[in-house]
Length: 347
Image (cartoon, helix red, strand yellow):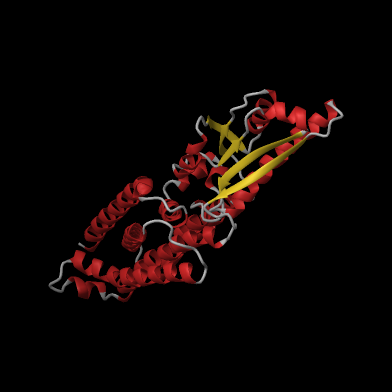
């Protein structure tokens, strides 16, 4: 009944609000040494638009990439000195739009939004003067200047595959033991219940480790997606995520006793949020506040963020401390809850 009545409502809400090609609420930073009437007008137009939120003014242009590495901004608008003065004298002005190219679709959308807003200001100037002013945006894409789509979907595929194999297969394997009645035979053996349960998860841990190695090799040598950061830390955080997914599968198996129910819960409750709420395909910032909050409890979101920082942006381990802490805490929480429920249920 839950599948029949509640799942359609959940899917309608998620697909209706999460799937959108619009990119909203992007954090905007501005470097404006000119501080003239033209720059203020362009900034106000960007700020008044629903697509951008003015986050800060940058004082030193050398810190622009640091802002992207810290995840503070999604787009940086750079003005040259004496922008309006040069525009009046030469009839030409140039601005720079800098964004994160690791997500090509979002990068293209953001630069198009900003370019259209600047073009609208340029059209307004045409109405007040006969001089054909021309403002030319220069677009700079960090981390993925060629806009290769593989840079975006490889981290997402890694998060989805690990969750699918670990959580779904582990829950089904233990549910199968319960369904056939062989779990009782295992529990009367000299081994403790915890050992029995963990041993069911061990094969999938190694299978997922092999899948991880395969994905990394294919990404580097077939899709030309380099591991720009530390390979060691990429493997470490991936193993933590695998362990977390296994614990989640154990938690599902402690709740249900049938394979088909475990499959439905794993597919509906885990796979759909991974695709829609993890930032794998659709930007989380564009979703309603409630879905943004729900996205924070989806483990795949934090794993995908960490993989993008290590693999695509080439950052060091200090940039993923937050993701490491969150994923480790989730893994510890799920394993404690699932093991306690298993022990209580089997007794």
